Amino acid sequence: MDRFFHSVTLEKDLCVGCTNCIKRCPTQAIRVRAGKAQIISERCIDCGECVRVCPHHAKKARHDPLSMMKEFTYTVALPAPALYGQFNHLDDIDIVLSGLKALGFDEVFEVSRGAEIVSDATRLMLGDNRLKKPVISSACPAVVRLIRVRFPDLCEHVLPLKAPMEVAALLAREEAVRKTGLPPEQIGVFFLSPCAAKVTDVRVPIGMEKSHVDGVLAISDIYPQLVGKMNHLEQTEPLSRSGIIGVSWSSIGGEAAGLLNENHLAADGIDNVIKVLEELEDEKLQELDFIELNACAGGCVGGIFAAENGYVARARIQRLRKYLPVSCNRLEDAGDMRRLEWTETLEYAPVMSLAENVEEAMRLMQELDRICERLPQLDCGSCGAPTCRALAEDVVRGLARENDCIFRMRKEIQDIAARLSQIEGAATYGEQEPIQNGKAPLEGAESEGTA
Image (cartoon, rainbow, N blue to C red; front, side, top):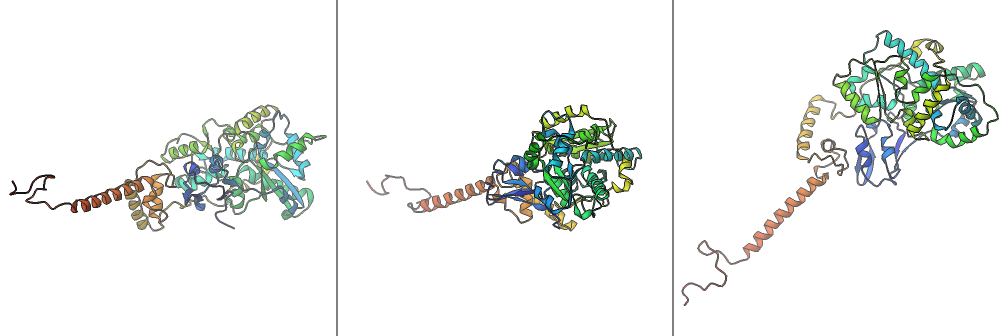
């Protein structure tokens, strides 16, 4: 399996090299070279920011097709709670779940059920004081990847629990095996996602060796077909088994509120997430118990695979919550606590280091600083790098030149033009009459000794 699989891809034929994307990437994973964007694979965290800002739709996110269901004997849909916010005037989740069965799924298992179990497990771990505080949520895979790339000192603060998607997939497969008697490999478990980062998380999971999810479907992709099925339902089945705590995970603050602990912070949007992480790295916010971070504005409802505006979806879910019980799932429903915990430790991914050898890295850093001092510090992006320092880093790595900076190039051209002008002037001056007795002859003056 490709270590750096990514759901976010680039279609170079559509790219015009406008540099919008390089300014928004939180890990400086994009450059524009020869008029086309390039994604540095090992730095990309699949947050989808470049997809949002590209005016030419050159950045796209991959997901699995609905036809993948045909590869399995029995299929289970895992709807993210953000799905419920896509429909206007929804007052009964069973309408959505019954619509999924009408779409062709054999069974439905809500991810919000897994969310309530994770909330219960988190409350237990916080109460036992076994975690280094403040604890950072591990639910958003883009944030987790951001931490391991840019904030290595914070890796030990990340909650070592599987995301609700994985918990729901684990329990859904086991339930389907008991119900059908089929072997696990014949049961297909599909996550209905608002988020491109989840596609990557299933292919290359963090904290575990293999994901429990077989495929990730984009909400925006199945939305038109699902609406059609929902509009023609003759009756609904009583399928929903989750409450306010689980469904609230769809929006920012929902996970933190589910801990029933007021000593928390919730931030959404990649810029705000970075600001919080920088303060944590500076050993601020130490008085908090828990920090919920979501790369998408508004929470999961703001994902690039959502069909509806994130803030509209969030308002709809707020209204839907009044019809729900507080919670319907407990840690005991998952059995042993160890089944929810990560099996692998989150470790720093040194994709931004200049060299493996410390001495060489220090030498390159000093050279980088010298190059950076010679650049204009405008961070205009015209060179194809997001900042002047990023360009200096590319120069040190041998991937760019200093005169890729248009201001450096302009100065170099001006210097060359000035030197050529001096040479041309000297040559022209040399063709004039020679200086006599230290003075140039006056134009029109008569020669010595003439009357």
